[in-house]
Length: 55
Image 1 (cartoon, one colour):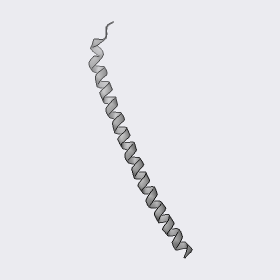
Image 2 (spheres, one colour; image 1 turned 45 degrees about the horizontal axis):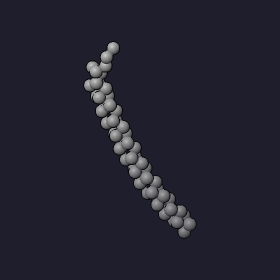
Image 3 (cartoon, rainbow, N blue to C red; image 1 turned 30 degrees about the vertical axis):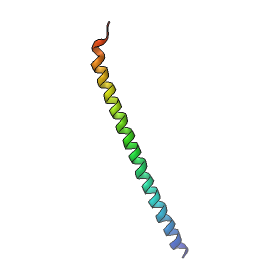
Image 4 (cartoon, one colour; image 1 turned 135 degrees about the vertical axis):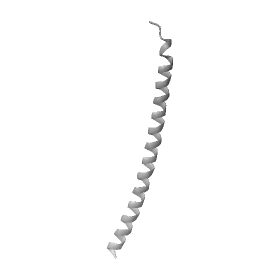
């Protein structure tokens, strides 16, 4: 009986851990995409405005 109860607890814990792993992965993915887009926009803006520099 004790082994069955332990298996149920492990099963629930694994389900919660798996769901949390997926959620964290999605957050990291979205953050990474946003950071990449910001870098591309900033790089394009720098290239566009480089001709405005006076030496």
